[in-house]
Image 1 (cartoon, helix red, strand yellow):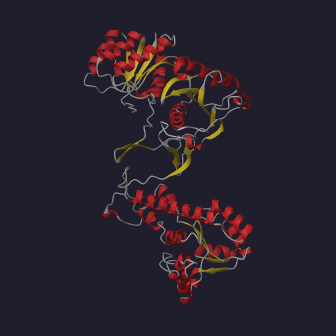
Image 2: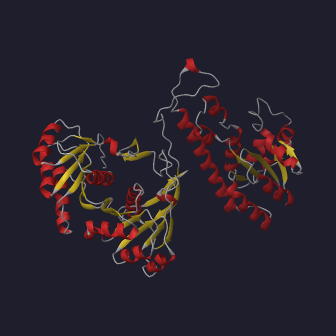
Image 3: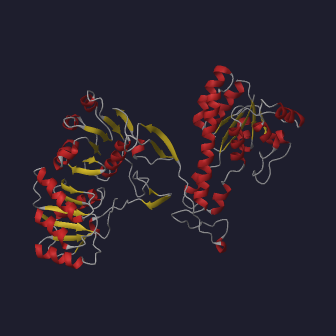
Length: 532
């Protein structure tokens, strides 16, 4: 048995080669890998000896040779193939261990030049991987250090690789090649080519939206069904998920998450992690129906639940703090589908243990920082349309106090300004048209997803009344501008004393005049948050 080893990432390769040698597997290798193995005292034959042709063009040509690809592609069960190998003095290669030049890591570095990117496009590696993967019945192809242990275990147990493992390795290899080629396509088709600037140090400008979009997602699990029981569904994650994103979570308890659970859980998690103070978000059908901040998780939940106890039934709940016993004892009194938090105390887990169907998810909060990745957020959002795809940068805009422009005679109080920032954060996650009443770090009424902003305002008032919450002295956030004064009149009639809206309507002055007439404060944010 012979193994060809050619790796860019040398993690664990010495240990693997030592094991292979101990099992009687002959080692063939290239360049730097061969040198490393030889330094460790392992008998290794360089590819140049096998091909009787030297590596050339700075290593660009070394494995592109019939004595390599013939040894990988020959079918052992076809006599004509084996006769051809014998005629031309080609030996079979039974195991191929390759990982590719680090193209993705290279282009992700600040200051990556076009020359650096091009030089890190692997040619021989993918060619060998494809050959070995195509001939999976006879060749095991290893493309990731995470596969080494399984390969070693089977070789030690039976002296060969099983059909099942070789096929799985082949599938993983073709997936890796697709990811690699997709990354190259994404990068190159985003480059703005400027011939007059070409040099070794040329760092090209790049279009945010490449000429071809190549999605790279890995299946996490099949789901029982989709949005409705007659639909099929599965959950996929990014190839490299951001820390703190929903798909990095671990389910601690409960039955399998459904399609709708996951969609609602994402809405809740994205909203709750936008708050710095201890916060709780309750989501029903992708809309926050209760959001609050408090001194701790228990107080935040108690306030959030007050907003709309009816809608909270069977909802999704997210915390941005550890759930302790007090919070758990409060939540367990209601019917909850999914509960998410950065952690749960041992006492809290005991509280939920009898509720075997409640899904508990532990998700680490992101480290935080300037980039979407640091915040555990998507950089891009996608939406399918008929035979097409809409791509946009994700709505990661954060409003600061300094961004608010007071447009009325009456000035907001410091307390109202803080509540406006809170309300604006919530409105960002409510389906359009969105109207959100808040007071003292708590939602008091939420109107969502209506064709008319006027209706959303009325619904928010109705919900507050049903929850026996007074809207007197509340602030209101509207995710887009008031096209007429009627929407403003509804929220002021309900008790609001301060309103935040983007501004930008032809009738802005009419609405400002109405606010002055009604004696309320109004601020413009300069940005809207449509969420369809």
